[in-house]
Figure (spheres, rainbow, N blue to C red):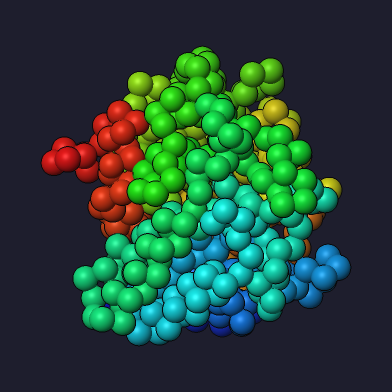
Length: 451
């Protein structure tokens, strides 16, 4: 536990924000902060979304936190399963950075796992949203009122990482790991092949069965779902499902070149600018280490590095001439916008920057991401609040709201920690089930050398 790091993070936090909205004083203070102190600060703030900001009864992550206290109807008690998976990993960062103690984290994890054991599940699969007070499903959309396999994969990624952190601990910590193992083994990944088809389907509902009809294939954020489904010790999928579903019978390899960089995989089929939002380079790789990871379809480090650099170069090029875009202000991903939640990317650019895009990309673009971090905290501190940078903003439209989304704040402390120490990558990639699944799918990775 790095209590000295927590000290510096606390000092940095005080320096940055003790002068309120007086940006001139704030800029003078932050100009003297080291890069490490800035990283400590943003990690502490974003971690705190999942610590102080957690839903009280379940301990899970609220779908959203609005500091202006304006919420959609009946939304304040809703927790997100995928965002909670990210939060589980952020709490591990909190332990290692000295923001909380190991004992405090253990108590929180016990609450979370106890809730996850009792709340609604469907063939072991959690829904997208739950009511944090009752544990009952809160429908994400009219027919999305059952199991969500993608959100469940993000949660399991976090749970496995927590298990690896505590597995050699005291009796109480080992008991937590046993409970996590049971939850992991109860997920029926193979059920989501819809009776044995060679693809995984995103949703199943006890009321609408497979009517959502969303087979998951082609490159997006869902690689971790296929890896975990192949890794399951109890309900695994075959390699054929990975090849036919995820890889779309090889069609996934039809890449192209933008800004002198290969996309490596096929992001889209029909768009003029086929590069997806940057969360695709984050969600699956919070635990799944892309360094040295490749299969017959891609080198996953090159995939993510190129994806990030394409977005960066696009923002620097700024073909739409949006105010503020450039070397210090970049990053397109799904986030809030002036028109609601939107999937920002080069072929759908509204002039909205989401800080999570650049800050969660530290492993891929450390120099460019640090430029963005320094700009926000020294030149645009009005875009930063209690839980770190606000979800999104547009200088061109003079738009920003003091609001946060769990799925955007969560990757920030986790990916920054992976950049700094590799903590979450090393934990997740030492799991025996995960390694067996990667080997089954013919992946190569430095972690598989002794398997």
